[in-house]
Length: 114
Image: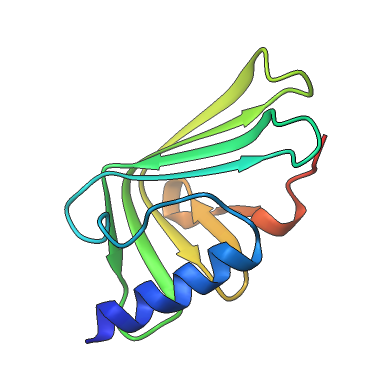
């Protein structure tokens, strides 16, 4: 039941930020994908891929394992890529925390549109 509540809450958040994702089938041990696209140009701004996505103990946080983040340039021709074995996606604050000791944060609300 807790996972279902997290899925519904996360889906509402993703809908509110106009993200495109099929989350219902990906909670648990399946791969997870998030993509932010500029609404005007249709070009990618950000992608996040993870090997797994799991609910994290009654918090508004999902754990991602085996994560790759790509931040794209203005014309989407190249990107900066980051890897992390574990990351935390807070769907209330719209932040992604990753890196050694979970020391780096990406504010998903403030990833600039092109």
